[in-house]
Length: 261
Image 1: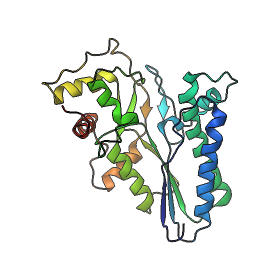
Image 2: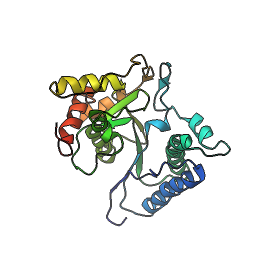
Image 3: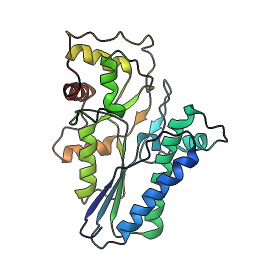
């Protein structure tokens, strides 16, 4: 950490194991370790943690509820730590709980140790947008590719954020002296799969795109206080969060590195 002035902790356990004992303690230990190292350095002034939308809430289709910087997903922690058997369906809950508990450990460390650096957390929802590396069209970056190839996806409706907005929010948290000890809700707008398909047809009218999902009524009805994220992005030269269409376009343009449209 000698000579380091800012840290972005973006790593996480992505094994998606269903046993919480194989994931959560390791993730908590990881955040504690890097925080201790940062606290021992005289040069570190700012620390940003890549949390997750799931640290605030899990998507629940067609249910109205509110999400803001004070919202925590305690329910998914209970789900992850329920008694065995640890069936494969529990894997996503375990991943989500690891983000909850890691971020809680972050803020607990700040409260108890009062380190000499500013700490912020960014909570992104589903990330779409431009792909720069043909070998990295994985996770949410591969969803559009999968749809193009005719593979239906099963993630429930939720919110999204553009990858460049996420990057800019991290940069802001590491450099802007006005952003101090904040949870930044990085949610741009809600979507479902048919929204993505309609955008794909608009952007690539000559391509064969799979039919809409039969159920177009499933929606993420959560209300989200994303004003702070918008404000930060505007302060860094943007008009606010990137739109879904613009982000999907970036995804498609990036996928030209991987497949031929």
